[in-house]
Length: 237
Image (cartoon, rainbow, N blue to C red; front, side, top):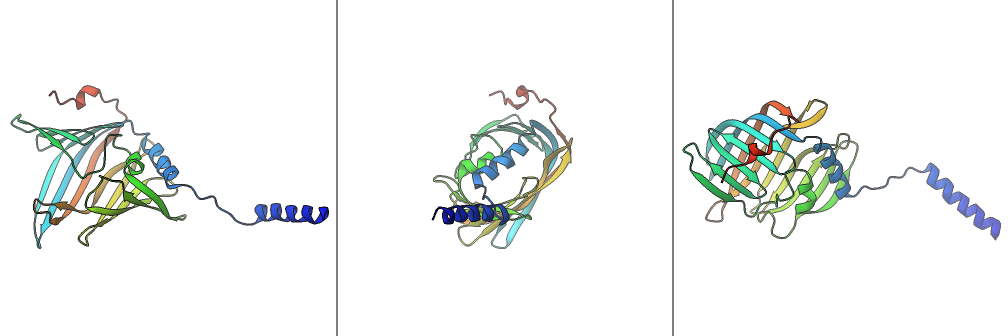
């Protein structure tokens, strides 16, 4: 009996050594790796072109704006578009228009941006489940936590398994609508930096109806880790 037990134990060890096996990584750990890569960007300055189009009952208007975007990790953003300035902290936006009029805006039914504008927002705002992990792509399903994204039922985050970069998102939206976001990167100073994003989503009108929303944000003359001062992000009111 003793020899038989030893043989069984030896056989189990043999199987562990020779059979292929894979320890599944939790979706939270994958998001952490994505965030660690993004964290190499301490600040950024970029010339931007923003194209938007709202589609209502087959009709829509195209708008293009140009300007600059400044980012300082983890939670400071300043955007200048056609001489209007936007200072963004969390879900609060302060706007100073070209005539120096000042406005307060608060985002509602949106992700909670209070932790900062980093991939950590994924774990903060969604309950996560690993859907697929292969050598080509990692897909994580996110179900919005209570109070987040009123019109979105699920988001599927697509991640590069080699570089751990967020490549895009597929959105399941109510009223039978779907959305998609694609993110493009360039290597700048040895760091993978997001330089463009485009896609489609939906905006809720006052009537509660969802209208198709298309966007494209492109960056040029991207500079990172310049040591941007905090005062650049202070709206002064």
